[in-house]
Length: 55
Image (cartoon, rainbow, N blue to C red):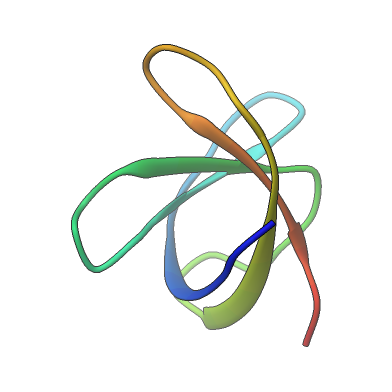
């Protein structure tokens, strides 16, 4: 998948929500709230993307 720089904006029960510069939502399994991270998109759903941190 494509790679993007995202900002982690929310911590959920078991996941984190990051936002692309276009404000699309990316769900991550790990992260630190408020950090910018580079992610690889590994899947897509109708309302959000699934990503994995690569750096």
